[in-house]
Image (cartoon, rainbow, N blue to C red; front, top):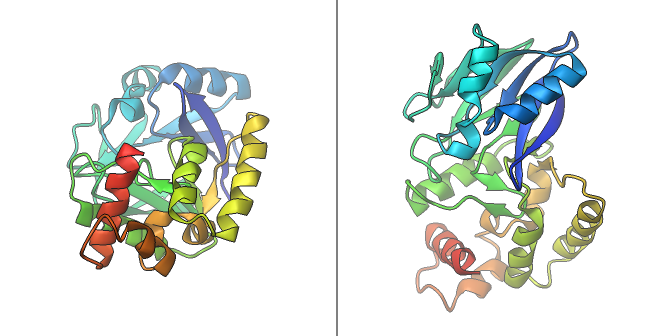
Length: 252
């Protein structure tokens, strides 16, 4: 079993650190090298790999400095995106070996065109595709691609732990409550999140099971969600419902 720690960066990013039992580790989406280097030094860890989900600067900005400090490091990331110093380009369907675990590469187009996720050891690192109670903005891909990517994630085993790249849960919950004010699971989760944030604790990881209960973007087939967007779209297919939700969230 791998041990996961969060390294906060910028306002609301999480750089996830994946540690094995003999003080070796990998980091996911290091937008800033400084907090990573400080953590490695404090805990006497050796960095062996960097996993990248997509090319946005707040996810890759720390790579050059980390490579300078650890010249033999394996930099894994999407083959179809401009990521500096990639040593190990991957695409959907590939497998990578991380310590003693195998991680599968998922194609998660939508937020960006080559966005990928990594799933293994019961854990999912999904960058900016799925957030707790929300999803990423659609910048480069299409609404249909984003919906397909989220459907892929919803099909994972329900106990899968979800490590998203941002602490957006509170603001996402405000939107989710506007969509499904009567969702009892959502009300309960909001109380839990408020308690965690009051103590300045992360709300992550979440699980696929929880997100299927509370995340409107994974609930586009639910009558309550469809009803909430019925004044925003005339089409009632899942992609149209998703599109109406995402556009509503953009202006929320």
